[in-house]
Image (tube, rainbow, N blue to C red; front, side, top):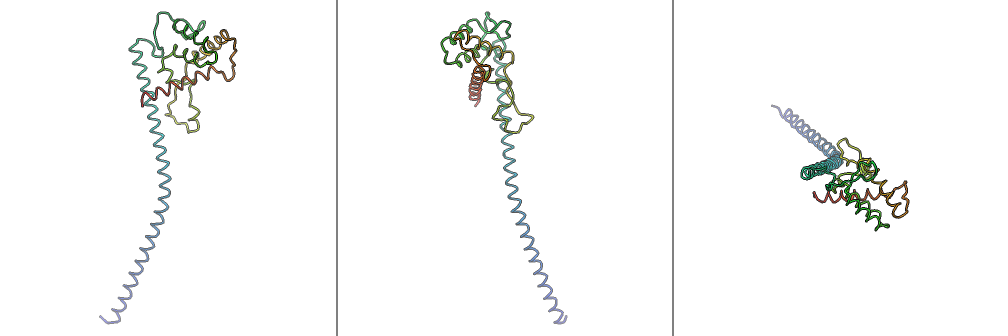
Length: 219
């Protein structure tokens, strides 16, 4: 083979190697750039995925709590052979009002009236004693004033599987409010307002208190 041919082959080989190195360098740079962009997007995706998983976990814990509450109410009912919402049983039950569906032990009703007479400045004490005479604390802790999604959770997107506490039976709630208002007027001469009714507020506070106590029981 001639010297000229060998020289041409050498030059061609060097040029080809240099081109491969440039192509490899450009490919590496492009890959690094893509990797950088993907990392930023991946971080955002991971944050969203983490928040979604956290919400799902909270929903599962919430549903689990209410299942435990329901199971406990059933066990109470089976043990006492009565409706689980009733805190006690007695042979002497009287309607809270005329033709009311809410029944209360006569002795319990007397205690409610004693508390009402002694606590003119504390309506909540009377409401608390009345609710405890009509319902068990478990029942109170697992119900809300009127049902629906709490205001603190309305800002979050509503999901089909979202667990919501049921409201107190409407007829019961109406009778309890009317009883307290009538009693307050008869004993103290005070007419409680319809708008922003303090009885409803007192019931709401009691339900929230029992709900927190119930949650602490299952921690």
